[in-house]
Amino acid sequence: MDGGRPKCGGWRWARLAVKDLRRAVTGQGRGEGQIAWAGRSMPVLTAIGERFAAERPFDGLKIAACLHVTAETAVLMGALHAGGAEIALAASNPLSTQDDVAEALREYGIAVHARAGVDRATYYRHIHQALDLGPDLVLDDGCDLVNILHTERTDLLDQVSGGCEETTTGIIRLRQMAAEDALRFPVVAVNDTRTKRMFDNRYGTGQSTLDGIMRATNTMLAGRTVVVAGFGYCGRGVAERAKGFGARVIVTEIDAVKALDATLQGYEVRPMAEAAELGDLFVTVTGNRDVIRAEHLERMRDGAILANAGHFDVEIDVRALADLAAEVHSGVRPNTDEYVLPDGRRLLLLAEGRLVNLTAAEGHPAAVMDMSFSAQALAVEWLVNERVRLAPGVYDVPEEIDHEVARLRLAATGIGIDALTPAQEEYLHSWRVGS
Image (cartoon, rainbow, N blue to C red; front, top):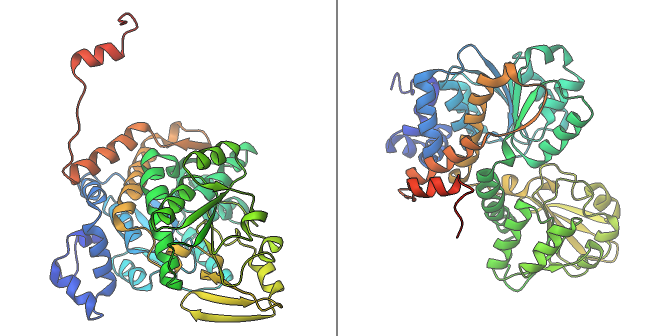
């Protein structure tokens, strides 16, 4: 420690002593304490960061990032900063920023352009400020930063040699850009790794979404009807956790294969027009817009709860809800607004239709983000080494990175697995041996 501050670009946040955590309880160094607490639950990223600090793979590189400004993100920023990167960070959601964490990052030399609760214009201004760094690489969560680069900051495009995208919504946008030959540099689809889909999307979203809903409403799920819109990896996780709490779960889908999968797992599958009349709680997890529209809102029961776990605030048509309402009572509970329809029915909208797990709760547990951000950190390192050979487009994370993240996680938790014997290796690589 030097003057009470960690050395090595702030990377030693993950190793802060218990006394530093106690400072957080009294309000002193609270952001540091939050980061330290997250770091203790992120052993894989901690190990990667320690290697980066020794090898300095990002010396001389500038990284602009648009991510949720949370303690877990701070551990990722610390790992990249320890590896030599100069970083500017903006928020990917105006309601998810932890101001104490943002301030702690600034004190350790990372430029943070984010503040909790800003309006839409300020949100985009912050992204522009992060891009003012003149980045060599970009990290995005939802494709807003990449979109601005390609529409409003095209003067910076020639310098950007690659990027990473964290979430499903962003990858959908990027693949469309690539299909239209609009994407100007290679982007790694971090969201599409097996470990990310399993740990983050399914288990992380499943738990943190219900955590946010229960904090906002204090509702009991047992015996209630929960409608989950979308049965991808995230929707599957939400449905599983709701079922585990004793809820009756109805799934809505547009994909026949996913709908069939849901029925084989024991869920009811209905169109939203039918589910709207049956649900007590609605959770959208699709990555698309207008999943719950005026015609659905008009059919809902008194007291129905509306929550979104998709990236952007477009899955529930909030404008249509406001137009339908005779009265709006904001803040009837923290992160809960009550919309009263002309016939007296009340609909409760959580987190203004934004990500309920990050607005009404704390997002994924640090152990979940350890996996996601470890894959992201290793993908950035891979991109630095491969970017000159990559044409513009969307690339999968190399399989060896996915396996390395899983291997490090198992090692950190003391779990051992078997290895193939030489005879088994030979058998798998031979077509001559039969029964």
